[in-house]
Image (cartoon, rainbow, N blue to C red; front, side):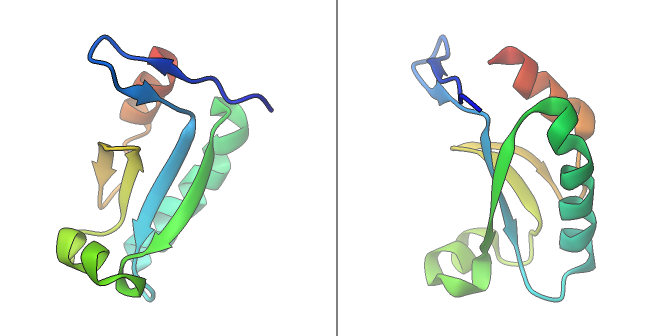
Amino acid sequence: MTVRLHRSGRGRVLTRDLTVFVRQGCHLCTDMLQELEYLKSELDFRYSVRDVDEAPELARVYGDRVPVLAADATELCCYFLDADRLREYLLSI
């Protein structure tokens, strides 16, 4: 798969690579990851998972606000997957 990158009107690089910030034992995190797996082939994106407790700076930034789905510095949704927002983002790049 070729990942397309381009700059938005504000100079940000937009990508189809997403990051999910999670915490072990979080049922909302598990739910979001399952939903992303379901949508991955339909919407053609990749994601990586980062445990916020593995890095003090992530734990400070996110605290109990997990899961968070992000594309670079753009937060797409928090707590629950917003499939419409994800589609909107992916269609914009």
